[in-house]
Length: 175
Length: 331
Image (cartoon, rainbow over all chains, first blue to last red; front, side, top):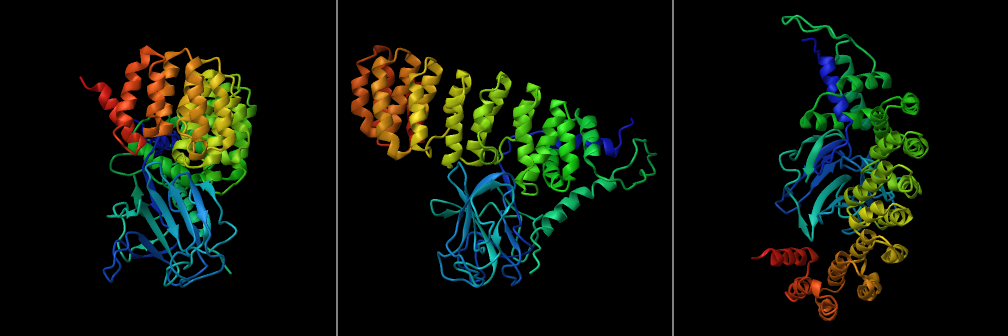
């Protein structure tokens, strides 16, 4: 049989181009850093989200939306200046996508830039990694919630505290 | 200040491209004891197209998922000019769709903000309806509604029924899966296209499958104007669409539907009217439904079912629908 690796991969490459309905969405890293908090802080306090630190680098990495696939992002600017170490709870800048299921995926704490605007995209930049809102240092906070309940299952098994993150790293999967 | 925020994206693209040098250059069978020699080759649009043509016969859901991801990443690093030229030259609808998908992926990753324009232009201008339909499919479940102006109002008037239906599918799926029915301008674009179409099937299909909870007052008026359509399916779809309008449009829609019931002759449309009146009023619609019940004995059972379900005091429309279905399925 004259079927080679190249032909096999070529066949697969063709299939990759065929549109198909996919309901699950993978979440990738928003910048280069490491996971600093998950369901509970080290103190034991409930957190219910993924924090990706930036090694103390503020306003350096672009804050990319993590959801793979084209979805609409609604951007809310609550802080216009450069804030790296927090300026009070509720003042975080936010990018969010509301799913038809009623769940909402949110990304917090980034610094406003010219890219901070509502739009549909597949992993685009909405600002720079910073520490707006309730924050002790520059990081990205990724959270899925519905009616006040936080989903802690979407990232379970994909990352743990200390996991190194790049934009190629899968952080979790949203159903 | 250096900005490294593009670096990870480039790295992902390069990662995808590293697959290419791993591919054996030829199609020679290798002896079982010795793996084929690997020779570096360059990933190009032409090479990609050749691979696609050769690989169309295979099928595996897992491979599809894997390679869709690969394509999405690789599209960002494909040479822009070569990709556009190949797309412009391609006349085979299937290949055109794949090349268009690569261009759309570049636009969605914001690697090439104008790439979507090239695809949209082809969707409008190509002489072959199969190519127009293929390029529309490539824009499905993306941000095309935000980036293509009045494209969809034009496409739903296309001379080809296939193209009109593909445009309708895009409007429905984009609203449902990209915007989750929560973005008013996208729903308004769909309503405008539905109203602009001369194809009753397209108009009815869009309105029947669209969430109208965020539409503008202008869109609500457009839908109301379709209540006077000569086509019963369009009237029925417009009735369905008006059942889900935003709170500030509920009173006007309710009055329009109540006024329509008396004149409407089609029992299917009347049945839809009962449902939308129930959806707009919940428990408050019971007196209206009791009044309408007497007008058409054929639908007395339907009106009774709605009256009973609305009397349960449920506060979610999905729960009301479920109870109504359960009630009518009970022996």
